[in-house]
Structures are given as C-alpha cells and as structure tokens.
Image (tube, rainbow, N blue to C red; front, side, top):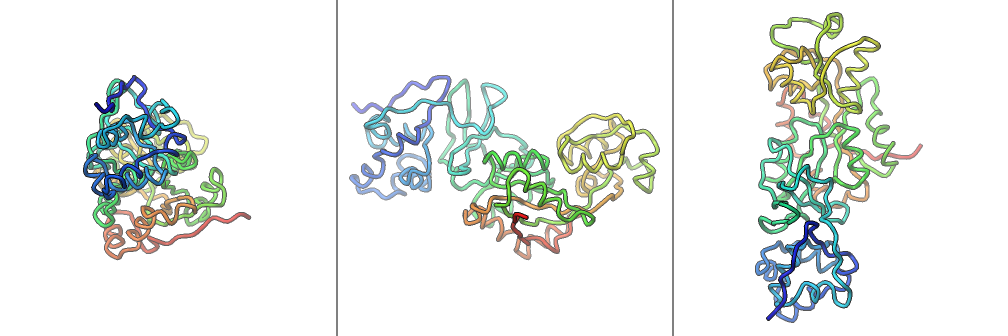
Length: 370
C-alpha cells in the first residue's frame, strides 16, 4: 500500500530547496501523461503551483506535498526527498502568529512562499487560505501564493485598490496596514512586494526618494498613487479655523507611531510643546478616536476624517507613492498594479474620494545614486 501518511509535529513541515532540486513531480506527471492542469485538479491545488514546484521556484507546504504524494501513490520522501531526506522545518511565517490558532494567507514573495496571519479584515474582503491550529496547517483550498501581491501601506482607501486589482487583473492583493517606515522595513526584508510611503510635500518633494533610498538603496521604483491632504481631524463641535488655534489649546491627541509621516507632521506642529495622547494604528483609527470622544484631535488624511464625519484642518499636501524593487518590475503582479493605476476609470474613482488628487496617478520614477 502506498505510504503518503505523515505525522505532523507542532512545527509543520516544508520541503527544503535541496529536496525540491531532485523532485520527481514532473517525471511522474509525464509518465501518467497528465497535463499540469490535470495534475492540479487531481491534487486540489493550482496549476501555477504545479508549474512553480516543477520549475523549482516554490517549496510546497506539507499539505501540498501530501496531496501530490497521494495522487502519485507514493511517499512524500520518494517524491521530494529521493535520494536526500525530507527537511523538517517550521512553516515560513512572515512573522509569527500571536497564538497557536489563527487564519492565514499564503503569498510568494522574493521567490519564497510565506504565510501571513490574517489581519485588517476590513481591508481584505477575501477568504483565508487555511488555518494554523496547534502546530498544524490546514489548507482551505488550492494555493493562490503565486497570484498574490502583498502591499504594506497606511492608505485608508487601499481596500478599494485591492478590490479593483482583483477585478481587473485576476490576481489578489493582501493589504497590511503599516506606516511608512514599517512598510519600507518589510520591503527591505523581502516580506512584501510593495510599500506605501507619503513623506513628500510641495516644500520637500524628494522626501519619498530619501526615505526609500535609506533602507533600499537606489535600485527601486516609486509609483505615484495620488497627492492627498493631511491635516488635523477635530470633533464637529470644535470650530477652530487653523492648526495654530488647536496648538494653543491643550487637547488629548490620537497619535500615530514614530516613523510614520502623520507622526512626523504632528511632531513638527507641536515643536517643543508638551502634550498628552495615546498611540493608535492608522488614519482611520485616528479619526475613530476623535469621533468616539477619547481624543480631541489627531493628524490623519482628509478621507479618514470625512468618513468619520469630522471637521478637518488641512496642514499640507503629501505625495503617496508605492515603492518596489526595480528587479520586480516585470513581475506580472506588479505590471498589473501599474496598469490599474493608469486606467482612466480608477483615476476618476480616486479623484472622487475626499482629499485625493489623481492628476499624477500612475507616474513612475526610479531612484538613482548621487
């Protein structure tokens, strides 16, 4: 009887690069006279995953390895580990789950399949790829890792971008809400495909380039999403007419994390003044803190304040750019993102959101060494 049953320990297993270098998936498929699509259907995974495994671009998860071994009626060791042993390791998480039970997404970034604990469900209206429970991965369906783009950005309208990206391209987008420095750090670690930053203003137009160059060097591209209004969200019963008027009166602030553009804006406004506040995550969280009444003011973008029904005092206009490595500009997912931002329909939609200016949406420039 074929041996395809394996004990899965608390640390789940993936097949190492050494093991996949001698896999017999393609040989066995051809021996059965199956197409990649037919094998994918029999194993319950995507044809893209079969292609990536056969091309040694993807290390299969243990569940995928077991599914393929079951189809070929052999052991996982025979399929992926002959003549070498199967390597045992933990699943390659982008970062560890907070507990021993979580939903996850899977995406291939930098040629490596990674698992992302599900977060920000309001921005990611799509099913999870599986469950991580007490050390065991339980896949919910065919792998979509090769067709997934991961974006780290604090843009409160990124959920719209993800929905339109999926509709127009057939790919999907995972949005991780992160401030600029955190997003660039994830990009530097090759944990995401794209990082959103918005440090540039009319007075300092090169700050996005400078921010990206620090961790990434000159080998990356900036893709313009929009110019947007950044300012101070205040309650509807606060009729202050300027940021200076807010500064003169002590208020409790909703604070963004250090390193975010919104926090830098607030620090510049406050200068050496003492203030009280509590840190929150994201523009929408700032607006919600003010709307709910526990904060008297907070720096965010106009769109977030408008969505919460708040008054808003514009401080500056910032340029929101998406940063990605130049080497990935031919990735079909990146190319699909660029095409989307250059469509007339998406630019029109974006310009209709409060505070967004889409006149330069889709423009792209590279970073160059001085």
